[in-house]
Image (cartoon, rainbow, N blue to C red; front, side):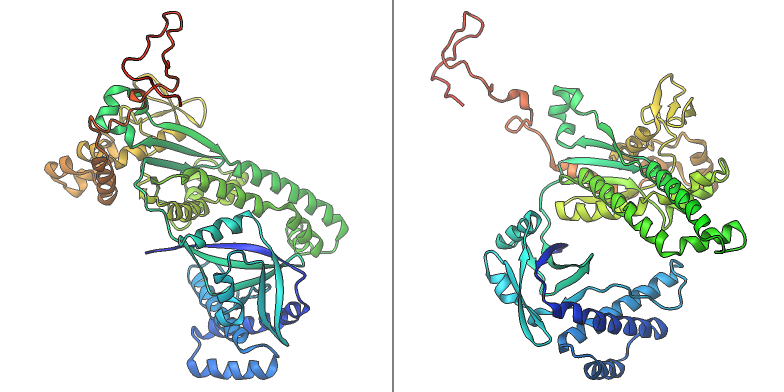
Length: 496
C-alpha cells in the first residue's frame, strides 16, 4: 500500500540548552558534506568513513547525530546538482543557512512514544546523556495520532527538531494510508491570475435513472475561488519600491546609476528585514492550501491542464506578442501555477482521488455547447459565440476539460470542426476511419478511467439514487390536519 507522508510540528516546552549548543556543529557538518557532493557528484564509502572519524574528533556530538548530518548533507548536495542541471541555481556551491536536526530511532524514545496513548514528553540523546523534554500538543497532532491509534497511519522512526524565531519545534512524520473510496464526482479546475475556476459533476447524477427523473442535477456546478495572486503581487511590488526609494536617500553612495543603486540597497539588512515582515510567501502558501482543500475535499476524478516545466515563461512568451507590459509579466511570474498543481496532487493522494491532465489546446476559445470558435467581446473574460450567446472564458475552459474526458467526446471528435485540427489531420494524412474512432487530442487513459467509473455506477429499481423517492421527513402520524393531509394506511408511521 502506498502511504502519504504528513508532518506535524509541535512546540517544545523549556528546551534544554544542549540543543542550541549542537545546532552550529551540526550545520557545519551538513554544509561541508553538501559542498563535497556538489563538487564531485557523490560521496565514496572510504571518504564517508574518513569524514565520520574526523567529525567525531572535531565535534563532541553523539555518533547517530553525526551520521544523520552526513546523510542530510548528501541529500542537499544531490538536490543542488539536480537544480543546477535544470538551470534553477547559478551558485558554485550550496549554502546551508539553517538546518533541522534529525534523531534516528535509537536516539529518542521512539518505542515509548508509539506504545503510549498520549505522548506528552520526549527523551533525546544529547551530549551529556538523555534529556526529557515536554511538548505542547494541539488538535492537528491529535488528528493524525488518532489515525495512528486506529492503524490508519504509522509514525516514522525519525524525529526532526528545528528552531524558528528562537523557538524549538519537534516535527513528527506520519505515513497515512489514503482512503479507499470510489470517486463520486468529476472535478475540473483551471488556474488563472486572480482566481481558480472549478466545475463539478456528480457521477451519481449522470446515471440514466436520475438523469431522466430530473435534468437539473446533470448540469455541472461552475464557480470561482478567489485567490488574488496578481493583485497581491502588484501590491507588494508597490510596497517594496516605496521602501527602496526611501532607502536610496539613506544610502546615497550605494551605486553610480539608478539601477545599480537600487540593486545594492536591496542587499542591505534593513531592506531584507522589512521584506521578511511582509509575509508575502506565507500568504501565498495559505491560499494555495485553501485551493487544494476545496478542489480535493472528496474522492473524485480531478482534471486539469497539462502545464510545462515553467508555465510562467511560456505564458510570458505568448503575452509579449500582444501586451509588452512589465507589470503584467511580473504578475504572471508571481502566480504559483505549479505549486497549486503539486498541492492538489498531494491532497488528492490523501483523500483517494486521481489527478489526470488533458491538453490545453483551445480550452478557453471553443464554445462547450456548439464546439465552434469564440469571438472576443468587450472584456477579457467575456466571449461571444456565433450562435448568439455570451460565455465566460474561465467557465469555458473547465467545461471543455470535462468534455475531453467523456467517451462521447472521443468518439464524436468534438473539436474536429476547428480549422487548425483539420489542417493538422491533412498534413499527417490520418485516415477518416481512425478519426471517427478516437480523437487525437484526448489521451486514452483518461477516457478509460472515466468510462470505468461511469459504468460501475448503474441505477436500478432497488437503488434509484433519487432523494425524492425517500420517506417524508415529517410523517402525518395519524393526524388529519383538517383534510390537508390524508392519514397513513396500515400501521402507524413511527416518529423520527
